[in-house]
Image (cartoon, rainbow, N blue to C red):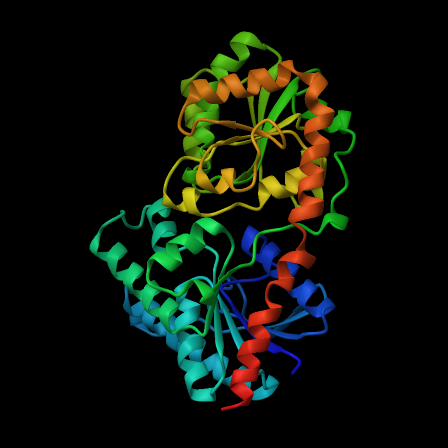
Amino acid sequence: MTPRILHILDHSIPLHSGYTFRTLSLLREQRRRGWETFHLTSPKQAGCQVAEEDVDGWHFYRTAPASGAAAGWPVFGELALMRQTERRLLEVAGQVRPNLLHAHSPVLNAIPALRAGRRLGLPVVYEVRAFWEDAAVDHGTTREGSARYRATRALETWALRRADHVTTICEGLRGDIVARGIPAERVTVIPNAVDIEAFDPGGVPDEALKASLGLAGCTVVGFIGSFYAYEGLDLLLEALPRIVGTLPDVRVLLVGGGPQEQTLREQAARLGLESKVVFTGRVPHAEVQRYYDLIDVLAYPRHSMRLTELVTPLKPLEAMAQGRLLVASDVGGHRELIRDGETGMLFRAGSADSLASAIVQLLAKREYWPELRLAGRRFVEQERNWAAAVGNYAAFYERLLAGSAAR
């Protein structure tokens, strides 16, 4: 039976995030395998006022935001969001006639899918990309161990136990899911990967752009992405005086924006680093590659917390696909991707001294750069490509569809 999969998503393009890029990669590869895919986003698709939308050749069904005074209240707002998602899911399922529902994080999508799946007699797959409660800790809306944290964790576990199959993005999350009592045979890792053909080994720096940013003649350590607290960019700034004490030509380039941007700007000023740190703000997606080409070493100094210990990020894989040099903290999510001294350099999480030392050592050993670049590229070509990752869906999709047909 050919899978006809209705994906239930938090958000999608035209919004840009690691979430939307992973989604597109999964969908492209599923389509290449001849599977039919349909796509529904939750009310959290910001700024969308239409019921259906075509974006870059992909058709998305949208869900209107929940209305009413209670929609803005804690708990009641989440309940209203789930009810709205479930109603829209049932409408869309009536149109496209899927034979499988595939809900993606957060649990606010999984619960409507489980309820709709029960009504429609369809199997439900729940794909965990991160745990909602851990993301809330990083965003500062709760703390680990709080009543809200425990309640959200219990809700997540409830959904995991009722899904017909669970997928997740890495072994760290899989271990946590199995530890909650989910049978190991019902949990499959669909790892983050890259479309290797979409990435060319690093290009030539645009010297005019480099000069316009005040980086001419400098060695550039950079980060491109969203400025969340867990990314550890504060640690990079803390380490910078130690780095420039040894290598005065080093500058830090921070491309993007987010909740921590103002805090980071204030930190740079407090440390007297205004002339050594360049903030570009957000840049158009089409321009991002030009900024990558300016960077000699990419830094991923994530802090250690449940989120970063369990979850593997996508950016280091994309960096390796481009043959980039990278330095990263030794949190669990990085250790699962990066082989220290072979495909990148790891440093002790939370230690500015260790980070500074790793960057100085890497910059001092330029003769090893070609070997590091090649090893990183080879790793993603052989082990982290989307064709191999998406192939892991096939066995349990087939089993679920066969079981559904036999009912």
